[in-house]
Image (cartoon, rainbow over all chains, first blue to last red; front, side, top):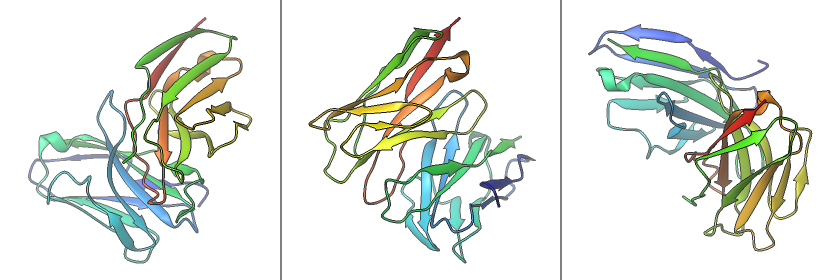
Length: 116
Length: 109
């Protein structure tokens, strides 16, 4: 695709439900990043992948959060047993990567998650 | 993760140059200096990056100190549309992109 695509754009879920957020990176991009952004704050790093390998998941807040990228393209961020504090904008980015730290990252429009 | 320090906010008049500073005294030899900005209600967007030499592109210029411990993003002629949060980020071999608090730039008409 032309850019990074995230779906859904908006998700309202009840507390305790599981949600899956999808990210479709730019074709051919090796690196894929997930961020969470609260209102008025900067993006908070969650995890990232090179190809299908999860390189760093140190930013995942707790074990209710997980991410996968099984075929090295589309990625899913899953939040189990959602809580109200999980409400935020979730952003995905991709870059040509890996070891090419001089390349730019492209961000998707984000998924606005609201837990009620 | 290598850290950067930026002022919380800055103001500039429209159509004047803006110099946004960033300190990164713990930068390593392989870290690239990246700048991103985030306009209101938008996702972050890439502005510019450099390693050692000063860089220019259609959006901005990046001036890197000789010792690489600081850099300055230069917007040559600010417009109201440049009002955003600007993030200075060090990106190393691990490819991680970690955002700090950034500088909120206000443009006065």
